Image 1 (tube, protein in one colour):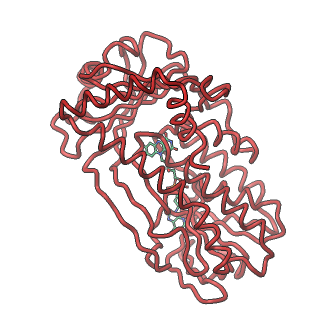
Image 2 (cartoon, rainbow, N blue to C red):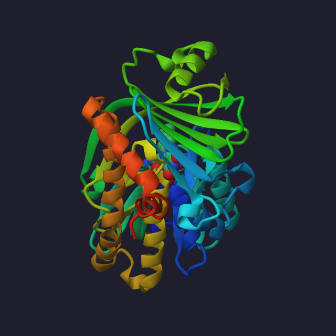
Image 3 (cartoon, rainbow, N blue to C red):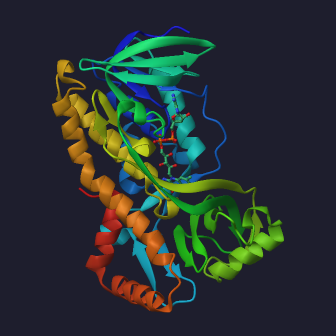
Amino acid sequence: MKLPTQVDVLIVGGGPVGGALALSLANSQLSVAVLEARLQPGEDARALAIAHASQQTLVALDVWPSAAATAIHSVHVSQQGGFGRVRLRAADLDLPVLGYVLPYVALAKTIHAHLQAASGARLHYLTGCRAIRLQTLDGYAVVNVEGDGQTALMTARLVVLAEGGQLLAEAGIGQDQYDYEQRAITAEVRTDKPHGGVAFERFATDGPIAMLPKDDGYAMVWTRPKDDPLDAANLDEVGFLRELQARLGDRVGRLNHAGPRAVFPLRLKWASSHQARRVAVVGNAAQTLHPVAGQGFNLGLRDALTLARVIHSVPTAQLGQATMLARYADLRKVDSLTTIGVTDGLIRLFGNGAPLLRHFRAAGFLAMDNFKPLRRGFAQRMVFGSR
Ligand SMILES: Cc1cc2nc3c(=O)[nH]c(=O)nc-3n(C[C@H](O)[C@H](O)[C@H](O)COP(=O)(O)OP(=O)(O)OC[C@H]3O[C@@H](n4cnc5c(N)ncnc54)[C@H](O)[C@@H]3O)c2cc1C
């Protein structure tokens, strides 16, 4: 294992957020290293709803796998057992599309290939290398790296945690968690009706269902209780489609095929800060959200972009210093807190079956559907975040 011993910026985690950050820094004069535990992106069943603004960022970084993307022109939101619905349209925001649906793997592989291609004297993309320990000092941080059966030490002016958050405690950053006691089941589903670029968010009485247009069918995300009385993840295909159809009604047409299912545990996690001595935190390491509103990656990408801007704005000697890190954390506070709040609020608002709340939600749908500024404001925050 041949590693550089000293770099300006060391990014731990080469997932979509850490990878995007590294590519944003690739044309600078800084020496940057990315440690990625995997040798290459593995299988992952999730599809990501990518907001229009995030897609523009990925295009600018030259990592937009357009052939794998399906456009979302509108989003249809409704609740089971209650009247009213909201339709958010791209035209509300004067945009060509609201966003896209993209397999996580397609994005991860494209970023992986670009990091490999960009790897050279200044950018070191180190796959199969895991950070196992982090120590921070006033002037720099030290990371113990394991790979190829060996261990080594690397030092950096700034360490960026983009690894999901396992090393937060070593940086002295706390993490709060809330277990939703839920799991997300994903599957590709087909119906007899073309999707027309419409994404459906259906708040069924026993858990939300997202139907994201993908190729000629849908990428489905169905939230179920952890101890699922239906055991939906293991139903046979006919039983699974029957239960799903009962909750969706006929708005997507007749369901006629469900591919293999995958299950993801759902937990809200948030770091107590986006920074600590010599450390910045981005993506899922800073906040891991419930996938109901499709915001986790979009928010993480905004972390990466902001951090890249702050890094570009300071002389190399000031990298990782307290003022620079405080500025980054300050810039991320509002967007992070409001996105966590909106996502978590949706779960709580729609997870409660009380009849009074059902009527309250229906009234909200009605107001939003008929009042463009309200609709526009909501869609704007989902597409661009809090600016
Ligand atoms: C079912 C589901 C559906 C979702 N749908 C959406 C959606 O529609 N829209 C959306 O915006 N978001 C969605 N999300 C959230 C989204 O997947 C995440 O927010 C996003 O993947 C975060 O990217 P990341 O790079 O921060 O972390 P990750 O994708 O978790 O990548 C972290 C990387 O760090 C590496 N790593 C870990 N530990 C170490 C270490 N010690 N050393 C070196 N490397 C390490 C890992 O191998 C991995 O490659 C969904 C999530 C789920 C579960």
